[in-house]
Image (cartoon, rainbow, N blue to C red; front, side, top):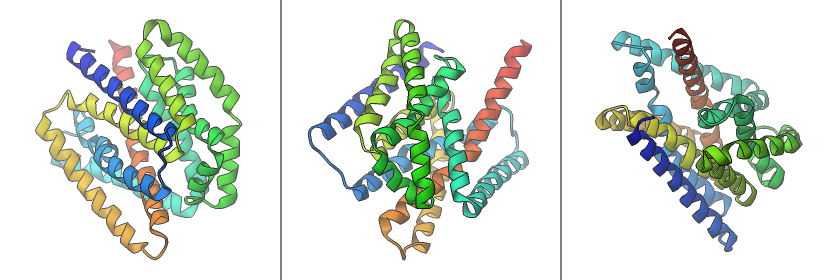
Length: 296
């Protein structure tokens, strides 16, 4: 990692620490937000920070040689959208199965946030904590959220199963922090902040803190430091804008039900549909990089 990249990475890390500390302090001081307000704030943050990190996938694909001209770009986008459409179809056919598989894929994907600091098992444990800890400390809230996405019985089952994984998560979290505390104190603090946020914050607020203030900015930063600012801004704004329009049209089509329930469904189903091709792309690129390193 270059000096400039290292400074930018550390700055992002400290901004995450500060913002997480502020949010936790507000909630501990008695501030509370209704589910409706949580959804509104989450929507804004997802549009500003969450969606752009996936919208830059064409740039990521170009940098790694997956397309070089207009025809290849069209082919890449067609495959990307086909995977998204198949994910949506699978969701409409079997939402509980799709959601369960998505949670597993999310653990694998989010584990990449610590791929330079931890081994595979430990970073999977940290990523698993993102799912397990909210279910352990806020089971009613998590079940309410899940019940808006899948049927109530399956939602309750998912919460119960994930919460029961806490001993495994505890062992892996302690192991990860002990490994990191001497060689990367900032990474160990990052894990501790995530654990505290999962314990003390409502699940939706915890999700926006992790996804919108840690995971997405870090991915955006890794791309932005290699590309021209104008390219990054126009690509992110254009594709994010199209996604927002599709989301708004979906909201209008489903406007007959409670607006907060509709918004929650659009946010999370939309993220599931768009995140699956994003995850596949990132996994493919990492495998290509590993293969190139093995041949050097």
